[in-house]
Image (cartoon, rainbow, N blue to C red; front, side):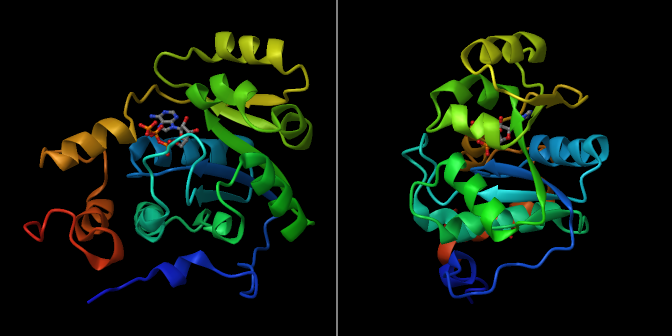
Length: 227
Ligand code: ATP
């Protein structure tokens, strides 16, 4: 049967916000289609190196820059993130953007989080590729004044050069860099392999693949051939 539904994750304004006792939180926005070891590694290492109490994964219902990602895969992507983070309570799945108008721009998400959790100190985690595009984001200047950025290296985007270029466009950028081995994996590449039935070699952990194959809305993505 269907073991999760859209309404489990879309959360209305009337639902209570998830509780936290965290004082410092690192927000980690993404599409997570699917979530992979790159996401897990950067979150875990950022957690260790920044000393925050929790990292909150914020799956985007409909990311502004990814027209092909439909809102109706949201619950499914949330379920995959939950599977990825299983057993690591300091890394939390927080589908908070479900409460916001679409598309949810990061500036709106950050403002909402500060309003919802006034006692929490927030930072925001980005891969260097996303940082490179930050100057084009809605409200980028204001965003930089609102929240410090924590950045992880990504193939093709050397951190020092990327930070310098972005700081040229956004002088108010506050940035910290995490030490991390370069993991040249992306959701796009993994999704293509999965769509062709190819082995993803644990880059998407088994517990996440279980959710992937069940597909969104309880419909098996592959027509039901996989376990
Ligand atoms: P896509 O292939 O569609 O671009 P993605 O693998 O980048 O997907 P997203 O969910 O879009 O996954 O990424 C969320 C965040 O994680 C972004 O800030 C991105 O820069 C970062 N990120 C994803 N994969 C890596 C990686 N392998 N190394 C460093 N940062 C990463």
